[in-house]
Length: 448
Image (cartoon, rainbow, N blue to C red; front, top):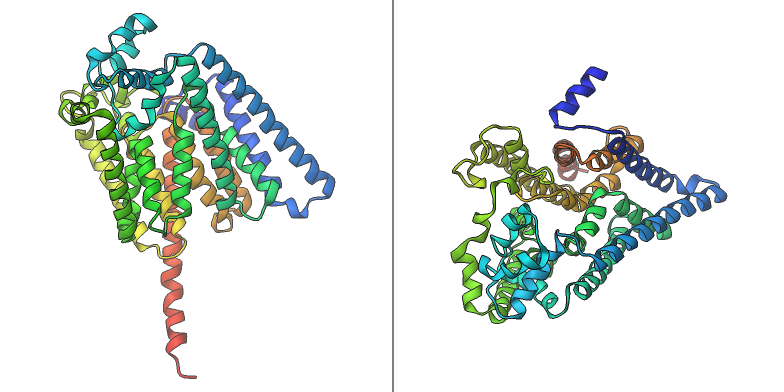
C-alpha cells in the first residue's frame, strides 16, 4: 500500500510535508465532524446536539476572527496580488486612461516596486478583464488603496454571508440553525475561502451569483444572474451550456440582453476608445506563458502543460491538441448526460459547473470555492451514493483534503473526481429511468 501511495503522490506532482498533510487532515476531519452529526441530529440526545452545535459555531467563530485579522493586515499593508491589480484598474479609469494599454501602468512600477512576475503578468500587459467587468473595478479608483481595500472586503464579506444563507436554503432547507452552521463550516473548511480572502479575490461574489442562478434556473430571470456572473468572472459564460442543452431559450435570451445592456453601460463609462481596445489589442494574448502552467493554476490545460516537455510553444493556450481532445471528450459526455437527464436536473447543472472549472484555462486554486455546490448536490442525494451517508462523507472529506494539500495537481484531481462521481450518478439515474419508464407505460395502457 505504501508503494501505491508513493506512486500516487508522484503522479500528481506532490511533495508532501508534515505541514501540508496536517492541513489536509484537519480540513477532512472538520468537514466530517460537521456532516455526520448533521445527518444524525434527530437521533442524538439533546446534550449531544447542543455540544455539536457549540463546537461547530465555535469553529466558525475562530475562522471569522482569524480571517478578520488577515483582512486588517491586508488593509494596512496590501499584498502584491490580487486586489492591487483591481485597484490599479480603478485608478487608471479614474483619470480617464485606457486600462488596456500597458503604458498606463508604468507609474505603478516605482510606486509598488513590484517583482518580476507582477510586472510581466500585470504591468506589462494591462487589464485582461473584458470592458463590462470594469464596472466593478472603476469605483475603486476614487479612493486610496487602503480605503478601497476596506470597502472591497465589506462587499466580499456581505457576499459571503448571503452565499451562506443561500446554501442553507437551497441544499439544507428545513434544518434551521443546523443548516446555517453546516453551510458556514463547509465554506470555511474549504481552502479556496482562505485563499480568496488572502488575495482579495471575487469568488464570494461569483458564488453568490451562481447560487442565485441555481435557485432560479427554471425562470427567465436566471439569465440576469448569469450575465452578472460573467461580469465578475468570464468563466461563468460556460454555464450557458446548461440552458442551451435544456432548451431554456428565455434564460438564454435574458442572459444575452442583460450582457448587452452591461456592455453598453461600460461603453458609456469607458468611452469607445478604451472599450474597443479590448478587442483590438487582445491583452490576454500578451500574458507570459508561465501563467498557464504555474502551480496555482489547476485547469486541465495547466496539468497537461506541467506534465509535458513541449509547453505552449508558438501555439495559443487553446490550440494544444491533447487539451482540445480531452476537453471535447469531457464536454460531449457532459452534454449527453445533461440532455438525457429529465429528472434530478441538479446532477446535470452540477456537471456543467465542474466541467467549467476543468476546462477554463485560468482556473486557479481558489476557484474551487464553487465546487461546494456540486458537493452539496451529492450530499443532498447521499442515499443514491454507494455506501450511503458514510460513503458520501468519505468522498467529501477526501475532496476537501486533496484541495487543502494544494500540492502538485491534487486540486485538479479532486475536481476530476467530483466530475466522475456526478457522471456516474447521472448514468445510474438515466438507466433507472429507462428501466422504470416502460413498466409505468404498460400500467397506464393496460386494460382494467
